Image (cartoon, rainbow, N blue to C red; front, side):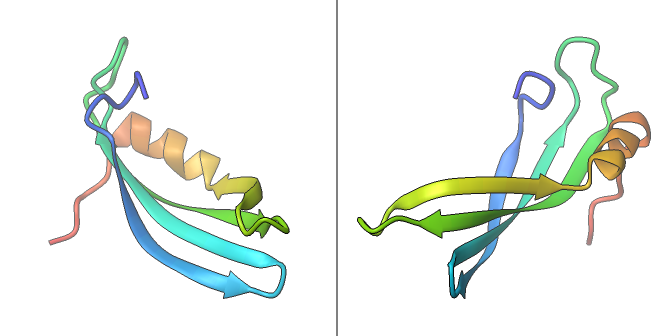
Length: 81
């Protein structure tokens, strides 16, 4: 969060699965933190949730393309629109 002080998380969708749910979201921000590059970042991410017997999230496994994230920190990304 320090690297992207203006970070926003945008919920894209939540998909029901037999064993829980998949939460898809987009991280958007500018790398202006300490030793920041000033480049924009926009990366799609998702989490696989397992739901406990109490109906709450029992575990969450996050996923994103780390090499694309590093590339965007170095070179930035064009915002859509």
